[in-house]
Length: 444
Ligand code: PFF
Image (cartoon, rainbow, N blue to C red; front, side, top):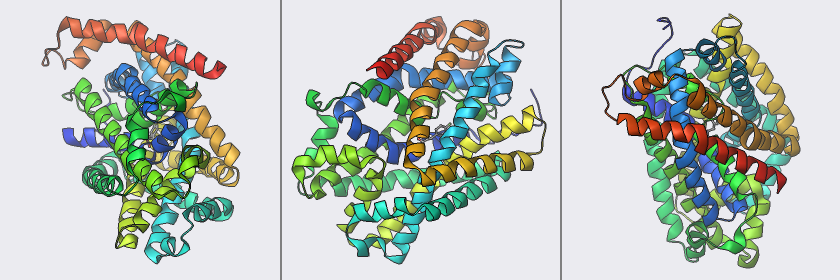
């Protein structure tokens, strides 16, 4: 092990950092809009299936790759499988991280604008929340500026080192965000007319379902859990040796899923209760696409006293949740450039920022490009990465090594049956399911 690499100081810090990466705009912004498009309750059921059948096993697999190699994603594959093409899985991951940043940073920029609009009270003077969001989307220069600010903020954290930046922020703000979502959820479900929103979320209706529901849910699971691109590999490369990898994967996945569902409980009841045309609500939700959160949430705050205060608080926490995710995304690409090309951390960060500035600017100007990056990363690149990571750990890595890592050299007694089940999932269940969903989704 390279003793010069930084490791996280505390165990709770490690879980918090991984949860900080997982919990972000993917849960609160992307999950609701995918749920709307995927038909509500059935989407959520498929989503939970994806988290259980390949989310948790793949996160553990990435942890094993990262902690056993203590290198960046590409370097990890080179160390564990020298002279083989497996390194390309790591390189694909680095590219995926870069692609995600190209649209994710734009949404981060929107959160900054909404903080500002909440603070000045402008958000609640407009009344037509949908038109307000469209106005922002049409102001390309403003979006570019906000995106750039977020890229720079992330870079500042990245430069301050993994330990200080990530660990501290996640531990404090995540629980507060969680609490706030619970409060907002209670407010949302007590609005008159909200029960249909809850039914949409939790009562499966075949008539709402689309054939792409499997691919949508799988892509969302990968995206939300930050798996399939080596992000968790990179984080685990900083993990201490006494961390229980399986337990951490379960904890992070459960927290991540809870936050996503909570976000749904805030957004759908509000959307159904506050809509002007109940007959077209579902098609409106689908058509609203990426704007859902930024339209419905202000609408909900508009119903509350002290709306500007709640709203500022919410968007600040959202921006913080976002930054712990962008830090992890930037870390993947930065540590790759730093270690593979032997350049300084400063230089590596600089190059990443320039690259993301270019893609982020194009996304700010073109919703089509934005959607393309979103689609390509969540529905193509992450599942492909996940497919190969699963095969790599299931078939290529030495079983004794896996055993040592998931049982912490025998200190945790999962036994052989557990290992067998785990390997079976990685060898057969996850790759076959990913492939089937992938092909079905693309062909349907
Ligand atoms: N999981 C993050 C979210 O849900 O917002 C997004 C993300 C972060 C995806 C890091 C991938 C990643 F490597």
